[in-house]
Image (cartoon, rainbow, N blue to C red; front, side, top):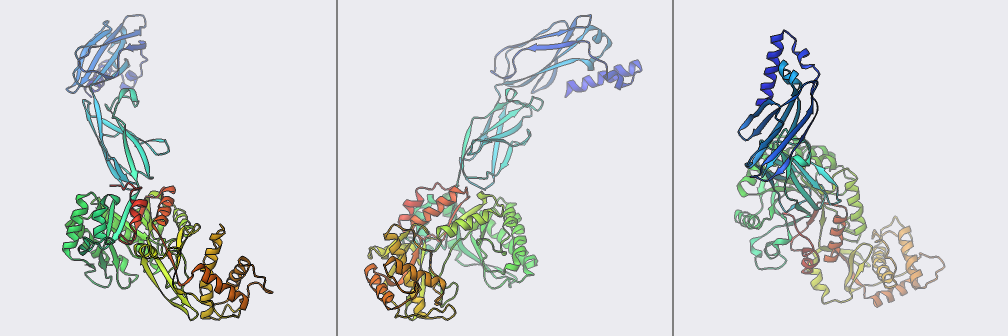
Length: 635
């Protein structure tokens, strides 16, 4: 500053005139002591007059005082050294004024010992203010830009402060001349935020700075919906395009299933929907502040060399170009079938793709399966991607572990999902980066004494419509937090006896296992007891099956010579139970709206970034009441 430069020049000139080294001149002890100045500092009102009174002790001679003032126009010497110790600034204009008082005794003044002066600085923020520009609602885990605007300050510097949902205040770091602060909140909830602004030479305290009003930012869970969004579904409930238009406010982002890639092709990216669909849906969503992140899947196989090949680079270029052209704000990379040995290659590709997207301010969500799974390097993926979408479904399916002997069970049972979330978080990723996939659909398994007859995946919407005509067919499992349903033709107990042999597949044993799942579930629930875990329907009569038969015998008051053996009395009792309970040949589990709500509540309890819905259109009408109205989606 001008005053500092003039002071340094004067000291140097004086030292050279006396022939003294500047170090010696600068080391002289000051003779004036105990400088005190009374007067205002900090925020004052424009138009007022301020007065400063300086007092210091001399060293055998009177003390002289010098007053400097810095305004928007620069530094100005307001009073040269004299015994006048009172200084007035009249009718202050809006702006940042710096008042500096220097004191030397007259011996020092005569000697030109300017560098030995005692000094006092006061900062006046005359009508100064700072405002902040912040969003009112964002998604946890997403980076946001906060902008400050200071007026009537000289070269303002800024410092941001926020209070997290636990009531702990944090700062952005040292004061910075950059009015923009990029911030990534780490958990859902309500944040209070403000910004301080001050003159660069002002002390780092609140009294000499001005601050904005307190703003509140709500970090809402992200709600992401997958779907095809066919335009033909404009007037059909249960179609993604219809549901999006009817319940736009329920979602902060959509993941249209619009792209596939073929790694073996030199031009790998292909659109699966007409361009009119892409533009119409994207335009509508953008207009209503819903992010569009198309889902990208792959066909074929991925060679180990592909991840670092020119074809992978071509795909990244194609995705960036498509986003620019269509107005997308991100992508969902939904790759689930590559070899577990290629986990590191996949993570490296995600890092490159994410960097390319982030350059444009776009996001990248990567779907992952529950750990442990070496195909997904959670920590490395989380360092690159915006979100990881945990697909903890299906826990059971009509094709697993085999097409002839699948195990029936929940679509996404609560204990299984809870363990999956905990395992994912144990990898060290931030909870706000993790989305929890919910899946409002059911699965069915049909058995007879000839064994497994087939299964199906059925949207919850269809199941609920069917149950409206079959009261009593479903029971709520309080452990799995899903419903179990029996429908179809009346089931038939297998003929007795059945031999204990875990290594031999017997379709009648498979049917027995199926029936025990349905009957034991209903008996336990009707007696306010915890239902058993689902029994595998592998067709082998082993220890688990014997234990289930023994439990059935106990429940129904049977006292066989050898518990766990399926004999004629047990078979007859099972047949009566089938009739009494109305057990059919088909067993289904369904993730209802209530079940989805339970999982979303779990996600909130862990501070996750939100949830994804597979798929929009699968949900029953009650979903909007149970989920849609209770969630405030981030924008």
